[in-house]
Image (cartoon, rainbow, N blue to C red; front, side):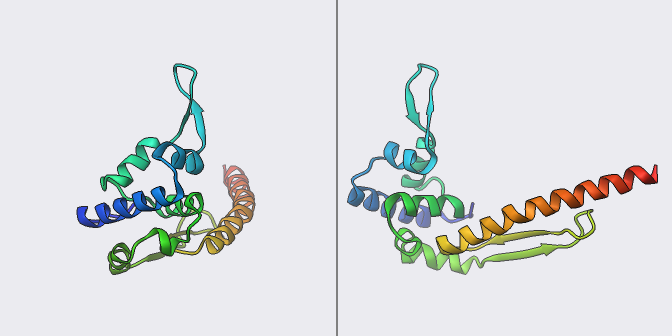
Length: 152
């Protein structure tokens, strides 16, 4: 989540409300489309994340990149349409992050941090790469554990 100022968060919230009105969805329906449903203590099926949507529309919080992508998909808009120009300007000014750390403790592995707005297509490609790589990392962890056991 970004540390955006209150005015920027409010601008986004007002814009989100307009998009919700245009799509004819309320906060509960948008939360359902983004985060699914759950059964509450009374046995009623309710939308997950209703409080999050409320915080976004009131300008209290700003969604992370994954949630922005879910909101855009749920409202059937692009990320460019979801995030108004005033907010994009502030987000751009904060500059995106791309960090790599090769010292994660397992030979052949590293960590990466990416903080930037991307198209849904790019996000999906990255998600697939990460999923495929998880299998390789698990194998490397297992090899590292075996090597550590042999040292003992």
